[in-house]
Amino acid sequence: NGKQGIFAPKFHYLNGKYIIVYGCNWSMPNHDWGVGIAVADNPKGPYRETSPDKPICPGFDAQIFRDDDGQLYLIRNNGILAKLKPDLSGLDGEAKVLIPENYPFVGYEGSALIKRGDTYYVMGNEHLLRPDGPLNPTMVASSKNIFGPYGKRYVLLSDARGHSRPFQDENGKWWTALWTWSGDFSHQFGITGIDFAADGTIFPTGEVIQK
Figure 1: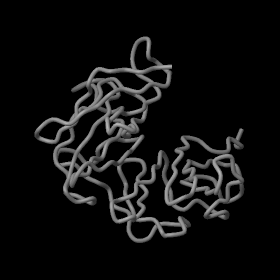
Figure 2: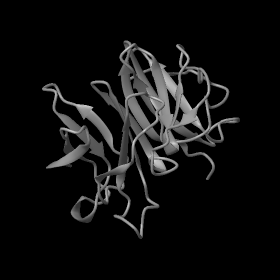
Figure 3: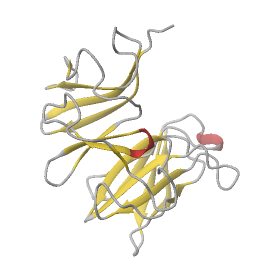
């Protein structure tokens, strides 16, 4: 009805602030499309939009990534990456697509970026891969430089439609959250274990937690 508000929000706690990055669509004048960021000192709010008059950039499915030096980046649809201004009110410089060696982008939606050691991993959901591969896989590619060049993309999770969000638990073990999978996991939230091979590639461990 033109008043949907926000969609695909991601919740972060960075630099002592609670941050929600989200897609905005038609909730307010001049908020017809793009990525918004809201910040608060308390997880319950109140939240303050960093750019109240318009989205900070076009796009959707955004995530904030903090590098080892404290610099914050915004990654969004198609693996488009840019630095963020310190006050999170906009992009600080040119946005660039992180391009794998074997494809124009890592995945159409649900982009994510992590770092392990000196290696960056960009991933995204690729619902266009059929008929040459699995349906709606999570694809991943890696690089030693945040803006690339990135190596060949490959399938991390087959038939995993839901925007994977990798994280480490308190013991240092890696997992990725996603909102849907195939079969009985369809349209549910779940977490699955991931690990890293000797050559640095990521693979699923088969451990699944679902709700």
